[in-house]
Amino acid sequence: MPLISTSAYHPPRYLFNGHVQTIVPSLWRSVPEVAYRRERIELPDGDFLDLDWSRLPAGQLAEGLAIVSHGLEGSSARAYVRGMVRALNRAGLDALAWNYRSCGGEMNRLLRSYHLGDTEDLALVLGHALATGRYQRLYLTGFSAGGNVTLKYLGEDPARVPAEVRRAAVFSVPTDLRASSFHIARPQNQLYQYNFMRTLRQKIRDKAVLLPDQVDVTGLDELRNFPEFDGRYTAPMHGFASADAYYESASSGRYLAAIRVPTLLVNAENDPFLPPSCFPRDVAAASAFVYLETPPEGGHVGFGEGPPDGEYYSERRAVEFLLGALPR
Image 1 (tube, rainbow, N blue to C red):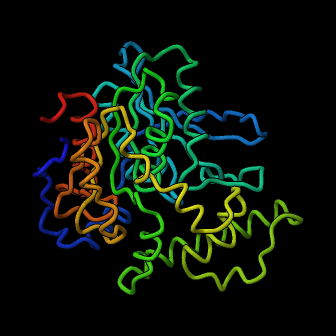
Image 2 (image 1 turned 30 degrees about the vertical axis):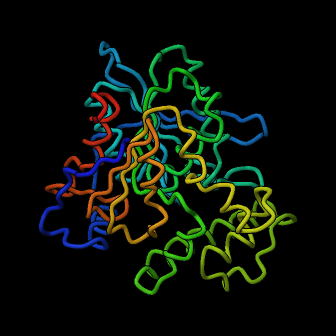
């Protein structure tokens, strides 16, 4: 019954609430030590993905490969991704941080972009990594939207998950997308929603320049929240009948019970993005594979410890779970 009753995370004094624990790491953390080698892979549908590799130095044999999935409107350049990559390299793993369609610095070619349940692209990245012939052990880690994609991938069709995938660790995951879309619209969360909507609207404008006959921007600036935006753009662009249909299909919570790979889910109780339904205690209590840790503090994709540029709890915890003994 993998409900982890206590957590070792304790924030430093300067990170005194969930909002500060969310904002400070996002704005002021720097991880300059990571140097990526970018690879672009062409996809069967005519689009592309940009992958950023961080391999161990020549002469060092990696214990395996960890694939890192970023959050909504993030990229491999975000500090939380680079921090995780640095920690994985220090632990003896090669790391691959992949950028979702439209997130690698260049707009993707097709009308479709990415969404929070898009497991097909993650499956393609895994297949590409295995095709190198270099790795017998794969590990998955992800943050927020990337955590949702990871959990859904592991649970929606366990038989297709390669045997090389040994463990996964994900953080700050909105396992219930519909409830989360309303939760982030609360008055105290308007700053977060505003920033997400600003970048999402800009991507629609960029897409309209690329594909003027396929994208209508009429009324775009009036869309103020996720249900409105997802109903107008995300759902129809990716084959869903409505925002609710998208949320129902893409939410990882419905797939957790089927996961058959040891998986750690860490969601902070004071995460401003997550409603109560994103803490699947009943599922974890009944599962032999899903380990749920709910520290009282941590914020959203936060978990800072000590100085902003140091190692974070999420990174220590991921390495510990991926490479250590399973909790009892």
